[in-house]
Length: 64
Image 1 (tube, helix red, strand yellow):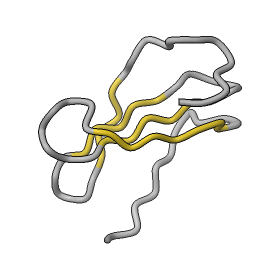
Image 2: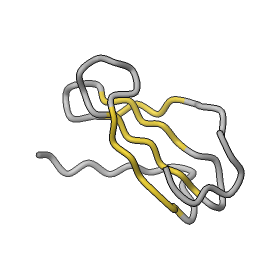
Image 3: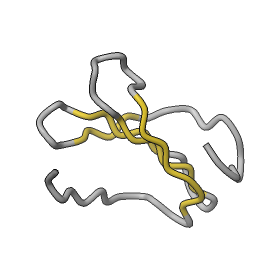
């Protein structure tokens, strides 16, 4: 594994889920934030992630 820092508009994170959201065989990261938009980071397959905008499913999530 390579240490990767995810930065940006992340505030009061409530939950993090790793799943293959884009069906490319790599684990992507979804971050549910209490004070800010939820974030989806797509795995590029090379140890780096690209932020992707996603509509929030809920306001003030308690989990993913």
